[in-house]
Length: 496
Image (tube, rainbow, N blue to C red):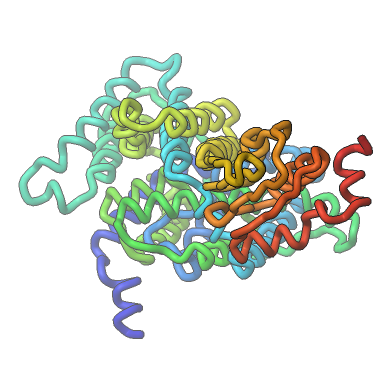
């Protein structure tokens, strides 16, 4: 137990502390921006990011992953806040937490195994593009000073690690922020800073219970929003956990992560914060800055609160150009550049799934829709490919009076038409034997196709015998087949 706690919390204190500071600095403008998107006070997003970070450090299933207020979640809150106000948002946040805890205990995270690698790659590339696009407003219609500062920031981020000794000791994004802030304060150049994003809170968060009636009408108001927040939050968190697993080459408990996200959102709601989820950008910053254990997430949350409440005068002086440089580094590091090279090597279906996920996610700015389209396309391509693995051969015996059909492959909704087309119902034979020993029937559509084959042969006066059904196929055929039921046969064939 002691070794487990030491490994999970205290195995990388220096790296976790420094990476936590970098993450906290990157969280501040985003939390403010997401609050503005949702239509609430900036402190709602900042308190949420603090609460979620701190709680998820203890309850989450993926060490080193950063969770906070996110843009994907903020977009889902706009209508509820506009029509009913902040109190109903806090209630929806609490309900979101409860639903996520239930999802964790129902082990819904296991559904992630149905998300193919091409969908994950598309998701990663789409988020990298969205992260970059989110920086464009800070680079549009600005003076040359902004471009110079951003360029200098990128030079520091990519050049500092090459310095001997200290290059690998201090995270280069932190050096970038400190140096550019010093330059900004010394020169007094007129460019946007964190202070221009919104007013930072001047007090610690306090316990809040939503001041709304607890009745069925309230539930009908908040439930649709809470359900959407639950689905999008868990989906983004599970996908981010998969990416961090790959970056660190370590496993994670995704069902525990579901429960942890739920507990964190309840904590956020009780402290006046909005619902949040895992953030791929900040998680990548954390990992690339040296963060590995739960302590890095805890440091990020605590540092965020300390900075915005006690060091607001200093934090407000950070130029946005420095944070833009950090986020551009994140987008470059997040994008799977190998996927472009692999377009020539991978099957067309894999490329279509990946590109569709990217296009839909970027086009809608909705992660859930993009992943849904990717998973749907992947399933359709898979079903089509498996449906092609079907062969029906035949041979004559007894001087042309008996034909044996041998079926090899998978019979289901995607291959049922090919299965039926393989039989010659007009051939004049006395008996037909269908050997199914190397076939498998998967669904009702397959059983119905078998029914139609048997019935059509019998209508031509041909005796039909089915042999070789494996146990699983025999179970579904015995339960749902109707070719031995005259009334059902008449109904199946349309009474003709």
